[in-house]
Length: 350
Image (cartoon, rainbow, N blue to C red; front, side, top):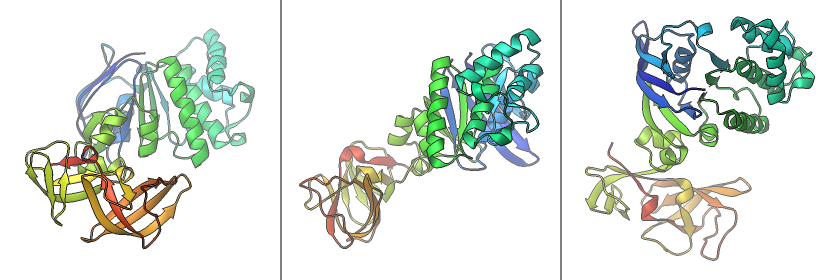
């Protein structure tokens, strides 16, 4: 495995800028996720690392080796595609062998590598089957085995779980993460799914309009988003526009005086995650906003509630389905106080 250094990478298609000034250092053995909406440039970036798209600007180093202009077959990167890209006329073993042939692996080594790769993904018993005889999850495991058989310096995955059903997606996701950790693979994982990114990443790079918005651990990005886009893309957030009154006091446009943990000069918006809000029968924190439950969605382990404040704002709240003595009834029409701590407030300057 090897560290990866991407510096000032850019790609234009005619006059359209797909990726602009993308820079990122990835440690040896680290799994980093490129996360963002469709069209943000994440797959184009991955394909530039793989060698399928030529950059307009910038450089890509794997270890101390500059691979920016090398053809894909000389980069030693293993890629797993969104739609598996298995050859229907080849058996499982032949599909895995194909990558070894392209990388000029000696014939005498191939069978051992095929067995090892299939064993890693627990697919050895299916080596003589064809892709049409496999489930979606099995096909994805074979695609992973093919990428790993070449013993890549960098492991690349482009939306690898998007074609699987919800339960299987979690299962294969956990298998990929476990395998990556066990082998110490330097990995770039592309997805538009926030939960998926939070679950598998050592670090994440959130992208929007071809640019990196923020890089950090899942916890740091979720708890301390750098801007409104990152905050909203990583999960629901309630926003209160307004202005700072003092060091730790924020006055909303609707007249709520909120206590915050920190001040940012010129802050114009406070954000609070839905799960940070408690719905109580009586005000119990510095920030307690009176309102009425307007709607609820029962999700088993939690209840998603929408609360209309007396001042007109509509809050999204997520409360555990295990009420305490202080909890208010979470039923449509119930009068509640939406309570949250100063530490739960995130300040934005945009």
